[in-house]
Image (tube, rainbow, N blue to C red; front, side):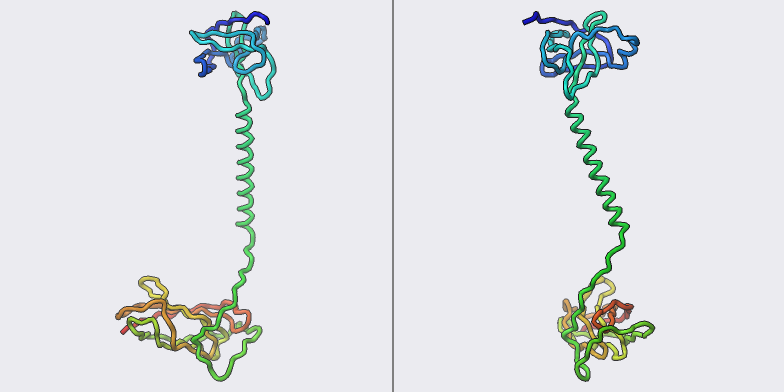
Length: 263
């Protein structure tokens, strides 16, 4: 086995090489600084520290020692600079860059994934929405039958036709009871179903919503979502309308403001 060589680190350069395991610290010249010191080359690289295969000696700095390896090319390694150990003699500072490469690869993958999500979001945002398919409504179980059974046409022409709604100056309801007797009617000449919702204006609370009420039919008995205490309440009755046919297309909606008197 060849004799091991001992090198002495000399100060110089702005780089700092550390091996915290053995407490070794030495300054080194970065590549740009070496280009300024030796623009035409001419310095000697005796070995390398930080990473290597064959040990050839040690380098000392203060009271600490670091292993010196023979100069060799290492996979996933890069020369960061040079420690002066003589007038024109240097040891290369070699650092493992595998972790950095893996980090950059992971970062690139994350950026590509983020870009893909951004493009997908933009495509979805700019895409035309698919037409909403509305489930057929259900005829309200409290609808009072008119004269004979009605038949539902395949399609009703609603273009230019008027929709009539009876005014509601006041709704007198029973206080403390969910079961109520009040008449909501859908005039027979209307080309549409009604769906009726009663909302308290001050709180925005919906206290009753019907199912579909065909033209020519009425609801006089219904169950509210909750009972009202005795008093007067500002309310709005929403009339949502749907074509009186099997398609049940949404039509214009109408609102009627009224006063509920619970007593």
